[in-house]
Amino acid sequence: EAGVTQFPSHSVIEKGQTVTLRCDPISGHDNLYWYRRVMGKEIKFLLHFVKESKQDESGMPNNRFLAERTGGTYSTLKVQPAELEDSGVYFCASSQLGGGDYTFGSGTRLTVV
Amino acid sequence: AQSVTQLGSHVSVSEGALVLLRCNYSSSVPPYLFWYVQYPNQGLQLLLKYTTGATLVKGINGFEAEFKKSETSFHLTKPSAHMSDAAEYFCAVSWSNFNKFYFGSGTKLNVKP
Image (cartoon, rainbow over all chains, first blue to last red; front, side, top):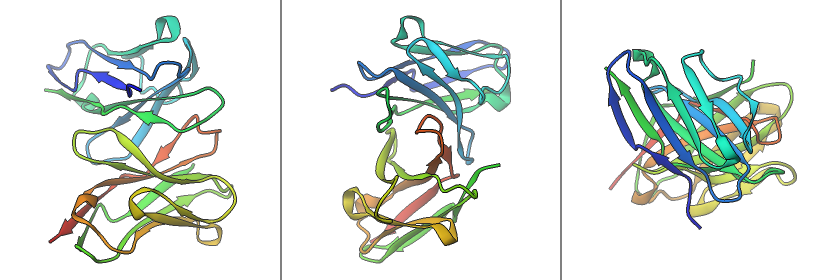
């Protein structure tokens, strides 16, 4: 089975620009999660989708971040406008409804210069 | 607030030596406990987890961890390090049916020949 796919693997953008990260979960996984790791610090929860609905977005840093999951399949995380402190690695994970182990993607490394 | 502490951002051991990576959590309510490993350019991979039952948990690649409620700890061990164990290790906890993880800041394990 294909794993969780994230695109792009790396992105370098200038402060003030917009970036969109994409996550394709494992087929059939209704739970989809976004996490972020700022350099050298802990990995922090951003939000949780169940199918297309946002179940918990308590970790979203501010309104410059917008996550969507139209159709309950892939998800996008848009940062607009990007700031220097948004740099880090953004991880996506998915799991089946009712619990079960997460499968993480390999992350998108975002650098804002 | 819940938190996870991993003591030592970098640990170095010789090949064949004992690996001990420390993890403590702060909460009066025992959580579910996890260890993840990240190899370069890969996603987080589940090593082992404790949910209920036996407090000594065995995982993949010869790793094991013991949940000690009185010490609020879940340290990861491996009797004999292998070069292929060099990676970054993350301790994580969850209280919400696995729908939100709290991660430690990670420990990079270096294995010397």
